[in-house]
Image (tube, rainbow, N blue to C red; front, side, top):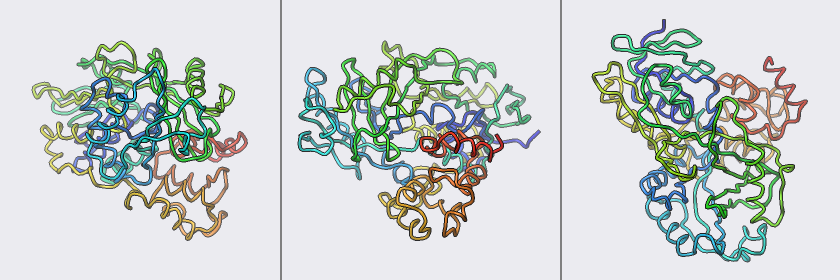
Length: 490
């Protein structure tokens, strides 16, 4: 049996990794348990946005939008390699939301979240705007506003890395099978043996109720599982703007420049039933997203154009809303009472944008019961691994990488800078040619990078590397993937 931990966190998604990082940095001895891979489900299947959620304003979720908007620039500052600003274009469509409503919503969006660095909204004439040329001719007026893009899976991994660097023990592929209170601590059963912890956090995401069931604890909230699906197609435009499109059913759809040569389109809101193990985009959802894009772009797409699709299940607090897209994206934190033995904190809901604030609030609650959490809150300004450089300087960092490693082309250097920031040298080393990085698996993926991801970032499978630590699955062919599989031992 292992030594006693101060805190055990069940679930290696963005909330679990964020809580583990915050708690470890305050001085607690932390154990993070994840049944699969870090960000293996919902946290790697988002629309990749750090945003306030413009459409939540019309559902009167002003507090949630304010909280999320306040986090945008904080996350950009602490992770300027994996978070970057992006300008979004919202075309006006006659018969849908009126111009006055869009202007009012965007004015609120600019003013309620403490925006300092991101540029404000402006009205644009699409015929004269760079983002207007790929659109069909029926769109004359639009609005341009700011939000941020994020590499969601890397955000989770970097939080886990920082937790580990503050002393946390991180175990992936280690499901928790059962847990029970014994005296003043939790006894946790896993595939790697038993662990003890003075307190436990249930950050199971979509499986939050399943985790409660395994430990025999009641649930204080009903959950609603809503599937969001996305498609990736060869790029539909050649500029840096993203789009947010209004749809006749009241939903919105994003079209985002993705991985240099592609366009990411999403998302859907569908009630999810069945297993969480294999969640994919349905044929109907793929067709829906193609049709959504075809309402706006001059170039039409069909399911045959989709090079990759993915889906994630959002765990939403059931607030009685009718349509899935109307359900709250807010979160609830539930901490057991003092007289009930070792504390259990359960996380219901949440979204990537608010993960850091959620984690801080969760650890603040636990600090009242755990003396080990006596340190002050600290994650507001402390950079994530590789993020110790100024915002807006990632291109300069990429240029430095090319200077030090002249065999890197511009695209490879920018990918590496955006993925690893100032930690890129941890695997590039002093290499002056590609051969010094070992085997070349294609798409710019080298043996040195693979070895680093396995050694430092808990990557154990090909999918861990190609679809979560990187997105190079879009670039490797079958033979290259097979070679990587062989190298990693199947």
